[in-house]
Length: 600
Figure: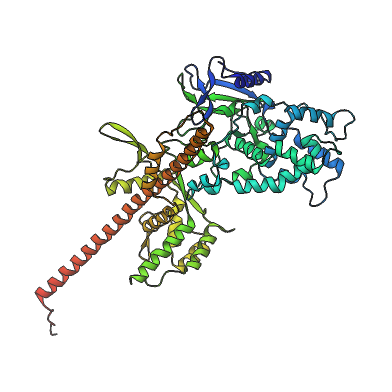
């Protein structure tokens, strides 16, 4: 592999010395604007070619790190298993915290200060209790050296920068508050309780001042966030090698990667399966660009091409096609356009929409008292979507309509930076057809969204009897009407409610985006300019994310409005036909007059 600088060369030499095999003259490390390091093909690569092979023993995870063994041995010797103690078992239950802590510890151990201190507390005659087995773990120093130290992911943003994400689905998923709480309540206290292991301090040297100084130098909150960002953006879900042996089929076992559609997986998965995979984590991710995949073998992991790759093309290992919200949250960059942009429509918004429409019908004199109170609606939504008996999810992800993917607009043959989806003159029939197509295509428009909307419009008696009593939900019918309220109108109103969550409009965002596309003044090499560029880059990414979400919402508003209007037009036509028939009957009656009674 051609040279990519001294740091990269040292890493590649380290990887090779530990059994990593790179296909000769196939790819090289290089830098990509907005993405950092990545892999580029140095020749034309065919489908299913081996790019590189990584031994399991150099993966960095809770199985290969010896931190857990040292902590358990120390706790056993110190008899720290009393109730309320902050033992390793408690740390082990704190999500990604034990892996992040292990990475910080391994980095400290390979530092000059750490090597010397560790040798003193673990040498002959040292007081630290050793675990069973030899401490022959991998020294990951060159691997740490090549990892990124700065991130544009929202976890690292300032408070004023995070405000740019208000209203988006990204903001509640950043997890900064939860991460800070995990560090403050679990990680830092545990480090303080084991100064010999984490700082190499003897009993006499382990003063409160020395411990705090060591933590700030090697295990600070900032260090915790940096390591956490590395895990978020670069880790893989790698099962234990013994599981791969039992599950291996036809010589291959495709990895599960980090494709986590549901955020809860971050907490539910076994942290021991989360691994930092040297070399494999150099590949970037981009929408609709996946051309390589990691495959499991009992003793190694193989990165193989999954599509032909031309010389000079970047090699991407993209887990699915992530929307810009996920790209930003994990990797700190966005794609334009991104056809996978998505936004969640919450069931509570559907409930609010139903109540508003019912109230409007009642105020206009069209309602007949079939509506339920807003409090009763909240209880209905809670039971339906967030209880032990829940029949539906509490939010429904929607993405662009397949018939109208986002594209850069063009005028007179010239392209622009404006992304468009549905043309303004699109006929209603096309919109209705596009919505039906989306309903049939998996992963585009969830049927459950329509089922939820229909269920929430049911009269109380029907809801209690069929839904709560029998667990039966109405079907996902676009044209459904209940008590004069159209399901399409419910969805439109809910989408409009969702749009109000953003502090800016789509038009304002488009203007901001055009402004942010202009280069900054000042010397590029100055520190002030670099900071300004980073802030502008982050703000621009936030605008791209929220604008993508708004396009998805607006597209669905247009499509559902078309469905609703088509239904109303059909009703008017039917009413006209009925009125016409009644008029004809009346006219015939007037012409013939009343029938004479025949005398018997």
